[in-house]
Amino acid sequence: MLTLRSVACAYGAEPVLSGVSFDLERGHIGCILGPSGCGKTTLLRCIAGFERLTAGEIVAAGIVLSGPGRHVPAEERRIGMVFQDYALLPHLSALRNVEFGLRGMSSTERTARAMQFLERVGLEDFARRFPHELSGGQQQRVAIARAMAPQPDLLLMDEPFSNLDAGLRQSLGQETRELLKSLGATALIATHDHHDAFSMADDAGVLEHGHLLQWDTSYRLYHRPADRFVADFVGRGVWMPGRVSSADSVEIETGRATGSMTASFPVGAEVDLLLRPDDVVHDDDSPLTAEVVQKLFKGSEFLYELRLPSGARLLSSVPSHHNHAVGESIGIRLETAHMVVFPRAVSRK
Image 1 (cartoon, one colour):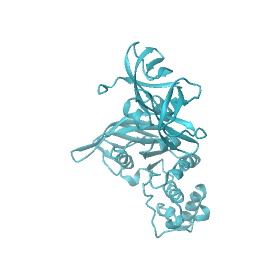
Image 2 (image 1 turned 135 degrees about the horizontal axis):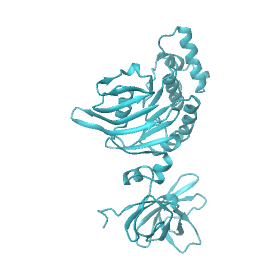
Image 3 (image 1 turned 180 degrees about the vertical axis):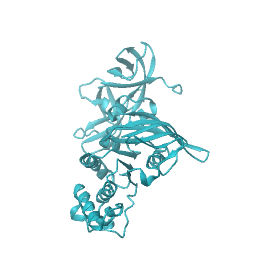
Image 4 (image 1 turned 30 degrees about the vertical axis):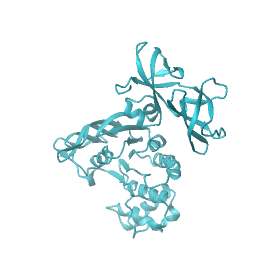
C-alpha cells in the first residue's frame, strides 16, 4: 500500500528527514516511533502531501505521490489524517463533523455515510453531541470516523493518544487497533511512546534525527534492536559489561547469562549486555541477592531498582504480592532467553 524510497525533506537549509525507506502492507498498521523533534510529524506531512520532498519517492497504491518533478496535491491523495488534537469543529455535532469531509454527495447521502461510520466506531447514539460533550476517547473515534468516511487508501494518525491519561491510552491502543482492523484500514501512526507502538502496530520503525534506524515488527524491535538507541528507546533496561564465554553465553557480574544473542561475537570479546526488568527474576532461593533501593507500584507488579554488592544497579519486574521494603535484600536470578548484546561502549570506564 505504501512505499517510501530514500525520502528526504528539509525546512530551508535545515534537513529534517534523510534517506527514509520502508514498506507498509495493505491492511497493516505501522508506527513511526521516536522522541520529540525526530521528524515524525514531518514524515506524516510529507506522506499526506502537506510538505514537498527534497529527495526520494513516496508511492501509495501503486501511484507515485511525491518524487522528482512530481507532487500530487494533498486533496488528491486519498489519504485521511487524524491530527494530534483531533481538530474537531467545536460548533458542529459528531454527525456534522463526520459529514464535513464528504464531498460530491447529496445531503442525504452525506448523512447516511456519516451515520454508517459513526455506527462502525460505536458512536451512533452520540451523533447529536458536540465535541465538548464527548470524552477524549469518543472524540478520537469521531476523528477516525471523519477521516475514514471518504474511504481513503491510507489513514495517518499523529500522536493519537498524547491528550489522554496513561490508564486510558493503554486500553484505547488495543481498542483502536481492533477498530482499524474492523474498518480494513491501512494506517501509519506517529508516537513517542513505545507502549502505543507495541499495542497497535504490525510493523514499527524508530526515527532519530530524521534517520530511520530500524523498520521491523514490534517484537524484533524489543528483542533484536539494530543499535543501542533503538534498544534504549523501546524499553527500560541497564547495560552490564561482560565477556563472551560461548556462542550463547556472556559472563557478567551476576554470573553467566545464556540465550540467543543479537549478533555473533568471538569468545573473549568484551561486550555490553542489556538486562531488562523482565530478565531479572525474583527468587527467594537464589544465592544471588540485591538490595531494593527504589520501588514503583504498577498494580499487578512492582518495578524494583536493585543494587548489587558492587554498587551496580538493575531493574526487576516482580509480581505485586512480593512487597519488599526499600533497604531489604532479595534473591534474584537471570532469565535471558533473548540477549541484547553490543560491543563494549568506548566511553565505559
